[in-house]
Image (cartoon, helix red, strand yellow):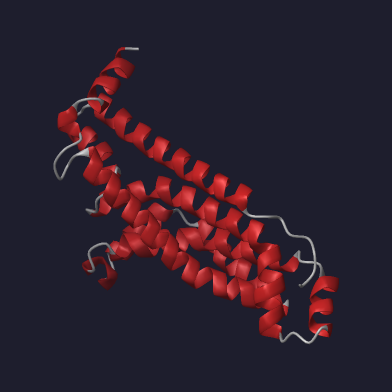
Length: 223
């Protein structure tokens, strides 16, 4: 109980919220890193998943290849990248490691969502004269959107938690609060950093769940 009380006092101390090492600045760094890696991951994974899902070819192979990233710890990838020329690019190793970590759920969910679209609906769209591109954008994508957003949500929450590793590579973010706490042998600061990461992850989870509820689960055909 004493640790919890000390942690609360640490979190509510105004001095710990100001400055370059303050919670506010570290939270902004964490959010920027998470959003940047999520955008890059989406730009890589979603076009591939949508095209393969539309064609119905090569999806299983792509998913299996991307899932290899789940079997390799992100920390191990980060350490290996630090030993390569990428390590000289500042945040480069962290960004690459996090992107590799976020791609599998994005690719898998988007591909599965595309393949779960009723093929009769797609054939009806083509029978109405739609091109493959039009059927993809106006029929398959809207119908697969709930599953796609679920993949984005999973990737975002995982990135929030895993981005704490950026501190080990000299980066910013809430992980710096935790590592600084270890360096100072300050248990309240370590616990406070962990609490901040957990609260941030829960906030992201809640935001995406709200967005998913607002997305209509369309089941009809083309209009």
